[in-house]
Image (tube, rainbow, N blue to C red; front, side, top):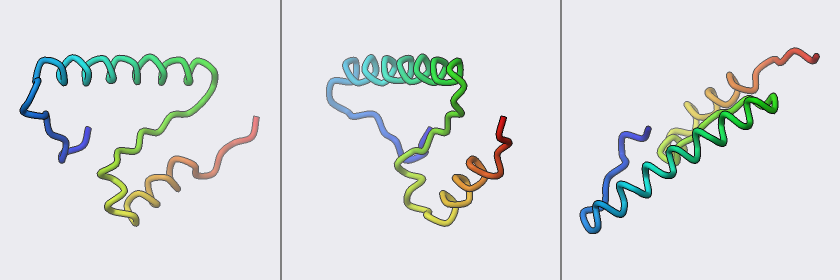
Length: 68
């Protein structure tokens, strides 16, 4: 999801499989958390380079919540 991400040039098969497994694991964990009633927000490392935009995104995510 980060525009700055790159694929290592060495051992491409290994890294491709690792990245695919990580994506699948992350999706499973997001689904599990949502099923438990959690909201999920993904923050990429590259987003931390723009603190104002990240703060805005976090504030929108947290925002006013209804208490049930």
